[in-house]
Length: 385
Ligand code: FAD
Ligand code: UDP
Image 1 (tube, rainbow, N blue to C red):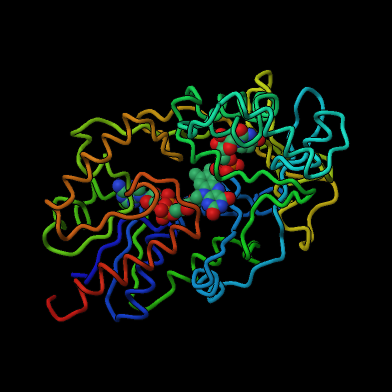
Image 2: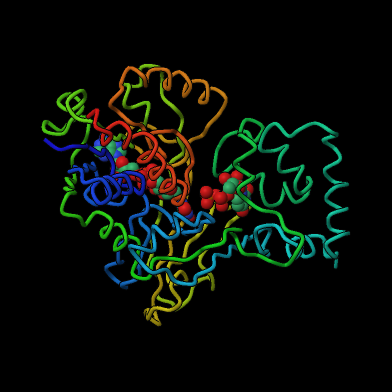
């Protein structure tokens, strides 16, 4: 038997496996129900063009956590890619996140930082002194109603199919608002893409003599590594959906899923940038990714490009759960699932699905390192094993 079973080979699971094997000498078995490692960060070469595709949606690495940055750089060098996003609204292209360029283009004005701030403060006055309670109020407090209605309201409706008044304010807090012309999408100290792709990085994390990976192995059906034969016999780090672990006994947690429509076009460049958001309701998709722009340093075909249209909807049944909806009902249900966890002292819940939390890659890696140091090592390595 193995010393530790890790369910899920995404960034959380692989970080735990790598740390426990390399740093603490445990034999670790990693299982994943998919036919590849890496979870949603997985990337592959498009067969027709050779362009690297992120199968589960574009993944941009960014972090201000020095430890996480040093950690990922052990497995790959990173390019100097800086993410920028543009948005199409009523036939015009604007820079995102909302910055002085967006504000001036939208209002056909030439505001400086001070007068733009004053304008937005005036717009946001409709909320009075109350603290924003949901996504809509938070957005209006940050940018005022006209910009909210142009760039946020309908995009969010397409993306979440949930009334913005029922979405948590922190969803929008991920998007900075700037009173400069800086249109970098992320504020973090470090940013870039793995030079030879995410999958190469993820494979290096798993490439350790003490780590064994079994693909196409589902924790709920496998005879050898399934729940029935492992819980109570071996410590488990579980990164699958938390409600599924408990047989959805308290009801399902709501997730959003995405549909990706991939197309190879016979042109060298389709949109001139990696991501174009579509802010309006008359276009059914939320954004188009054009993958060759993520790696301008690579050779790519002059007469072909791969684009991916992204559509968003509620997940049902067999759909991949991508984003936790996190409505008040979901949060209440999650708390009740958490109350069941102490019944399973040798199962450690982690990652995006296991904690029902939106986690960027750097957050998943940081959380995995903390789980290793604060929970797994004291429990599994400290002598009371
Ligand atoms: P996952 O990557 O989801 O891995 C979980 C693994 O568990 C999966 O491989 C799954 O197959 C496996 N699993 C589940 N159930 C079972 C089971 N029963 N048995 C066996 N295996 C099972 N982060 C960024 O930093 N930048 C981005 O630009 C970015 N873009 C994103 C875009 C999209 C569309 C999505 C969905 C996420 C994005 N993220 C991004 C977040 C990033 O994907 C996560 O931070 C990262 O995947 C978290 O890793 P994880 O290990 O927690 O989960
Ligand atoms: N958002 C928006 N318009 C945009 C981009 C983002 O309204 O053009 C909102 C939307 O609610 C989204 C949130 O901001 O869910 C976070 O955006 P981000 O780009 O981080 O979304 P992700 O890449 O995680 O889907």
